[in-house]
Structures are given as structure tokens and as C-alpha cells.
Length: 92
Image 1: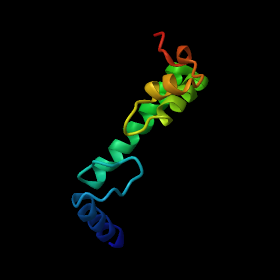
Image 2: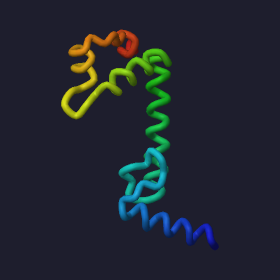
Image 3: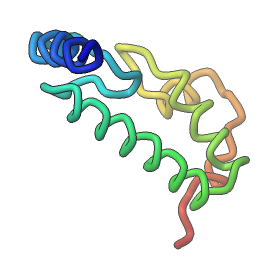
Image 4: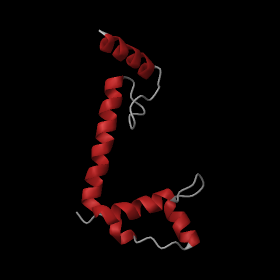
């Protein structure tokens, strides 16, 4: 009975827009947040398989350099940072 009450409270919080599940941001119910988190996790794993671990890490390095004013690619070019873009170009 306590589990049902707890689930009901979590549903209410989710409807108010509070993220309850890591990666579930944007879901309007607890179940939706759980599905979003699962899909995002699987998407990242599939992308890593496509690019290989090394390419996936290079892609993350470039994305981590982005700011509100510039994309990661622009900042890499401006600062002359060595990112091997060929590693994360999907050949499939």
C-alpha cells in the first residue's frame, strides 16, 4: 500500500515538471520520464558502438568546448585545438 501512495506522490511531482529520473527531463509523468531516460541511454550506447569508443570521446571533447556564443567546432577552429574529427564521422 505504501508503494502505491509513494508512486502517486511521484506522479504528482512529475506532472508539476519536476525531474525525478536522471535523464528523464521533459516527461510529464513518472512513466514517461522512465521511458525517456531509457531511450537516451540506449541512444548513447548505440552511437558509441557506431563511432567506437575513441571517436565517441573525441565527439564529446568538441561538444564540451561549446559556449553560449560559439559551437564547439567554432571554438576548436578559433583556438587551434587538435580534435580528430575523422574519428567521429560515421562511416556507416
